[in-house]
Image (tube, rainbow over all chains, first blue to last red; front, side, top):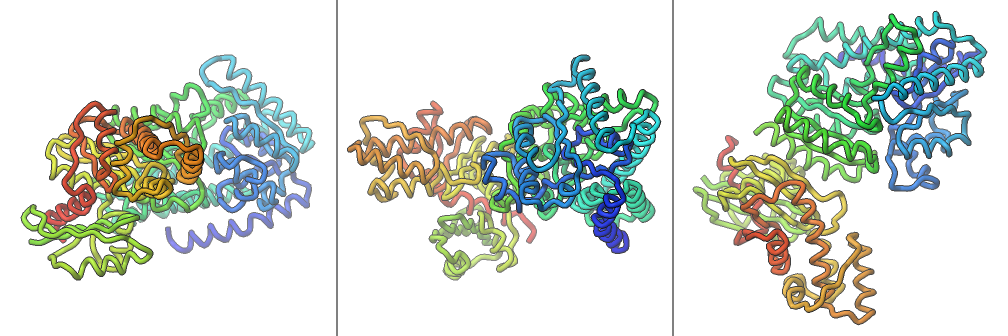
Length: 381
Length: 250
């Protein structure tokens, strides 16, 4: 990525908090989100500011462990720790925080989080397969809509929702184009760079700024398209990382893979490719939203065939040489599902597979390094 | 051409020099608090044309000696395959980790797993418990073989197991029986790791813990098959690294 674009990203990131503070002073409400199942269009349609809440760094975990058990997923502990120590500015800004009943750890944590901020819990079905699940989820989104109307004082009409969907779809399109850059061989952009751009733009109050910047980066790389300027060469192992979400602060595995000489070409997770499923703009907005969000293939769903289907497409589209499945410690659903993922990856595609279970700390760097390097030796042989 | 492999483990550093596929020199030193100094001491005692490093210290070795590296997984695979051409499974229990490695027919790694970040069930664990029971590490396995009874040890954490052993001693349990229980506890853990990867014959047992006669006997019994032990189980990784160095261009 060139320096001009990068400094622009930095600059926009730095402006973001003051911008939110100003908008809040002017009366706009802020709604904080954690998870990809949250329909942010509701917030956008109410002229509220949707923000991503912190939960990808190790620092607040120690404070969280005063309340939460140690043997819990770092994402949950980090999210709670940020709230408890009041160190996430986005959480501080939030007039309403949205949680959903995804896994056991999260839903019980949200009960404790409620003492810091008003919280709205979306009851997420555990399956995508029955009609009942979708209509139940639709009703949950309607309830959430009513709640946001109350908090913001704005009536959320279908027109407003359609406008919001158009905007978030544009964002998804821009993000997908960015994530599709590594389909080129060699990829013009590293996995870490990609992750940095997506993570930082994800916090932007004004989605249009993020969309414009992502489009700019995509244009820049497509225009150049010069393999000599790629940080990789055509024989660099192309690795797909699947599993739990990854952000700055919890990117150590992606970093270690690329330091060991490979390229993370695709992230099949909620911070990556799962976040660009489009909402159907021709359907009734709430119905279209309900369908799109419920189809998110997270391991909390039982069964979860969407993840296999998505992996199947991505392994082909990105010419992947090996798959690493990342599980945060004590995340049962991803940990168990790894067995099915390995079976699929090795039987259908005959690719080397590695399952890593870790947390946000640096204590196991050397152990991870040995596994990743040995895995890459398998990829190359 | 003379090539060397150096395997820098958590407890010991192993150096092997190979010429025309034959081991012409082999030496082991404790890792200590200063592994770099220990490497220097080992290196001055012999000569070779090139060297390849493996083990958890491979990265500092690379920095200081500008040598290429491979992981222990690949080094052990290569070493075991050369020593035992029919090898399909390797169990390596070293100072602080346990590795199970599955090989395909050609000797390439098809799958591997390692113990998680704690040293439970590794050489370090045996060492700590042997000391608690008043045994030298070398006599620990033999003592366990002499046991009459079977005591179940429930803790796999090194620290907890140590206090469990202390309380068993306080209850005047036979220390051979406790020793046996400790070996069984490690084996049960090792077997579940092995079964996730491979139990296809030939199974090669390597690493320092393979010198322990009780571990060897019980492993063979629990898997109901013959286990092959290299003559020098500790140096399989260093030997593999030296063999890889024979082929590599540098």
